[in-house]
Image: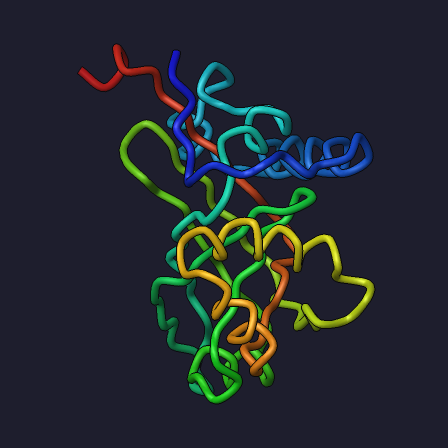
Amino acid sequence: MSVPRCSVRRMDEMPEDLARLQRLLDRSYDAAGPHLRGIITPERRLSAEEVSARLQGMCLLALATVTRDGRPLVGPVDGIFYRGSFYFGSSPESVRFRHIAKRPQVSATHLPGEELAVTVHGRAIPIDVRGAAEAGLRRALLDVYLPRYGAGWERFLDSGPVYARIEADRMFTLHMEDAALS
């Protein structure tokens, strides 16, 4: 079986991250309705270790935020799965981060094809990638983007984009073998 990857990067999850992620996956599945459980059957679920192995590097996410009048707005963001959580960035002036500042509820899906889907619902928590507490995430971002964009990307990172971590309330995974798709 091939392991679909977002792009190549090391796996940063610690045992406690994997245990927390597995509890989230199990709790989410247990709370799912019959329709979702009919699609995401036990053999189509991924463990925390499997999720972490597949979500390496930049993973394109469709991220939904909430407008003032309750409408969802969805758009693409670069997602980084680090230590068992999705992180994403944008401009501090973006509509996305203006929504998050007032209504932090978000949903995001990584869906590279029929064979894999990872969906998360929760809150976006702003973080400072220049702070000491986020040194590991900063290193992960540099590992992903420096080979793509060169040394100028680190200057860009220091110029003011904002990042957030999705603090997940629910996370669902779906993985289907190639044979199940035909």
